Length: 82
Image: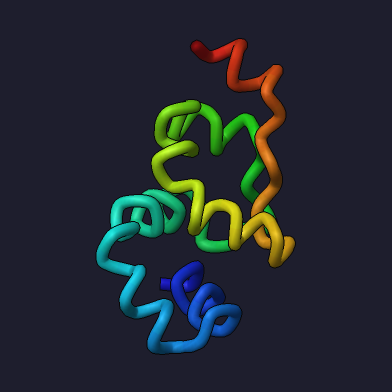
C-alpha cells in the first residue's frame, strides 16, 4: 500500500506497523480512491469519509496532511455534505 509506505517513511517502520492495524480501513479506502495521493481532492476525501470518518482517522489523516500527501478538507466542504 503506497500510503502506508509513506507513513512508514515518516514515522519509522515500528511505529507505522503498530498503528496500521487500527487504521487499516482508512488506508484501504485511500488506495481504493487513488493510487497517488497527490490526485485526491478535498471533495473526494469528504465524500469518502465524511466528517465523522475524518475525525475517527485524525491521526493518520493529520500525518498525511503534514507530510503534504493529502489536502486538508475545509469545514465548509464538510458542512455541505452533511
